[in-house]
Length: 133
Image 1 (cartoon, rainbow, N blue to C red):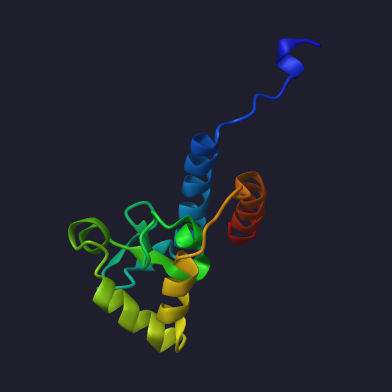
Image 2: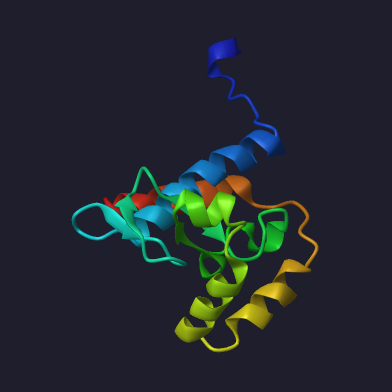
């Protein structure tokens, strides 16, 4: 078999990085207006999709909620990075959208996640992103 016909298996770290990029783009596109702008979930600042970031209520270190749409909303860099996610405001707004979601996300984050289906999620969010664009 030729080397070019062999598909190189990506490491979990590389798959996670690839999914991070696709998922972030999906979240930002999902909440974008028709004019390509987004409102920061925590401070209401208007910005472009490219200027925005995918903010996580439960920190990204918890794999069980890292790629959860319920856990993520677009944020400006001021809130997401410099404001450390503005978790109090994030929680308040999530609860306004869906009562009980904060406790659900905290509980979900504690689940041990082995053999995460990166490739499956990558394909899913690629297709979802195509629907939005």
